Length: 493
Image (cartoon, rainbow, N blue to C red; front, side):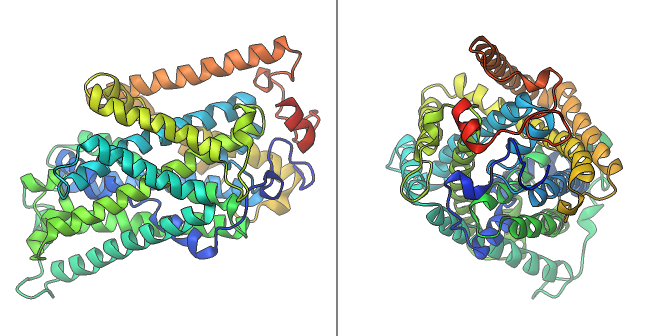
């Protein structure tokens, strides 16, 4: 896998994308990537189910994400590429791996776009009660679509400020919460009895603690956006390395630290915790207008996720077009180097989903909500499997490129694969998550079936053989496969 023979991967310089994202953009995209509306709202459900032991649930979920990000970072530093994990899955697992992980990831973010547009409308509707919810949703979609259509720099600027607000807010909460728990806040005294006072640390038992890992993993999704965006930065290797190395601090500080403080400040079984744990904590401390402040912060988090969703969906589709895994017409770039057709594809389906949310909320939209529940887990599992295969080849063919390595390889890599498999199986077994798993499994089957149709049609046209049939991925030295040049790959696609 030498530098001149990357095969299925394509360097940012050859893609036509522009490296307009600066280091400050990448730093805040990486920092804010894991701070979503799920942290501020959804974490209350985890606390309600697991009690104070929800901290353990977030530690376990965060640990999995940290390991996956380290594996992704190893590959991204060794081989910066447009499409990031799509390109690595294609090299490691064959055509089917790249096709599957690419379209699953696209489907995940298209759903996020729709859901966040609906959630954002709900937040704004409190201040705009006379405007229909669907109108607010569509307006949010239009505004952020325009931001992404203009240039990657405009995306970076919006995400920079969105992330700055989120990071600043959670940092202030950490400081205020710690001061309160230590008894240094006016009128407060040092007290962390809420961790055990209400029926113990794990009042519901160990089962709910382990089950809560499943939604907690979903809250961390977005950490990998920094690796995807690195292709449009001036220093891809440096930025990816920094992003993956800092994810440990982000997970432990922002999630585990803040959840610990919430549970220490407010009893886990307080009814207000399920609806908004951070609002409940701020009200307990005595912060005026806590509800309004948190509503503004949730709106910022929602808009950030919506913005990142449009970006991620468009860039992964752009990468899919480079090898014929998506319609070639989506490859076209604007004069500013933006894949506008790929953005419009994501937003068009987003608009449809928003309309469905108000026309058929209990049928079609309900299926959409459930159908992406396990998709992020499928993507992360494929990332881990890709790292296991590519690491062996890199050690054999280009060991100097391994500037950032997975810890305790291969043992920790295999542990990550096994842990992800256990979480997925648990989703299939638990009654509370069985529907999410079933709907997500249908999504996976549809994507695999689409790949089967594509592979069959290619064979019928005399196209390249299916790499999944046992051949090594194209472009890997020593595999016996001939590396495709950029022009040949484009011709075949």
